[in-house]
Amino acid sequence: MHNRQGIIVGIDGTLASCAAVEWAVAHRDVLGDVTPLYAWDYPIMATAGSPFGYAGIPPTPEMQDAAERAALDFVAALDGVDSTAITVQGDPGVAICDAADTAGTIVIGTRNRGPLRANVLGSVGRYCADHAPVPLVIVPQREGEPATRAARVVVGIDGSNNAYEALLWAGRTFPDAALAAVTSWQTPVDAPVLFGGDRFDLAAFRAHAKALVNETADKAAAELGRDPSRIERRIAEGDPRWVLAAAQEEADLLVVGRRGRTGLKHLALGSTTTSLIHQPRCPIAVVPDPETPRR
Image (cartoon, rainbow, N blue to C red):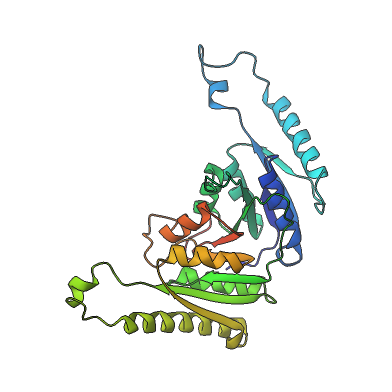
């Protein structure tokens, strides 16, 4: 994993992006300086030909100036941001990922749709989750709640190299945090067929999960130069999506790999990670696969 410092924070003038900036500022001592980025572009209909396009759309320089003023005003109202916002024309997701080529972390916010609707990651967040060349932190909007320091960090473990790298990133980035490695096990749906009736040993599934999380945690502790006992190990029965979702209730940060053990090479996000980032209950860090080349 690279050692670049600095945080690119995607802003769009919403309360969700305020939450993202606040989280970044709260962690700049370990992640580096905070640089907000605002991307704008003409709506598709604005550039369409007649009769669908709009007449007299402002020229690019005027739009760029207006965007820079809006970004400047937005950042000026925030605490702890010393740098001027980067303002570019183009797709926000692409712009954020491109800017991260010289940074160490991306932070974006996601809006809370209310008690009857789940948090829904927008197209920008989904693009960043798929393509970010550095760890991405997705911060849920929580009105009236200040950003919380990552004092309790939970990392999802599934035996994949990407999950191991996620544990290493968490340990290196937050060396003073309470660190927990969490894995789950569940009986395969076709177990009765494969093993014949009820003649399969549930203890074997639990033992395998225990061995997996211990092996990963011990290996990471050795790499980090940390006492193995300082990495808590948790094993739970159930779907990993449910287990890690529940773990968020007592975590300040959940860390997962972009692609898990069963992820297909042509798909960036594993099913567990996809589920978690669309309904975050606490900030979630998605660590990219170290084998994926930087763009």
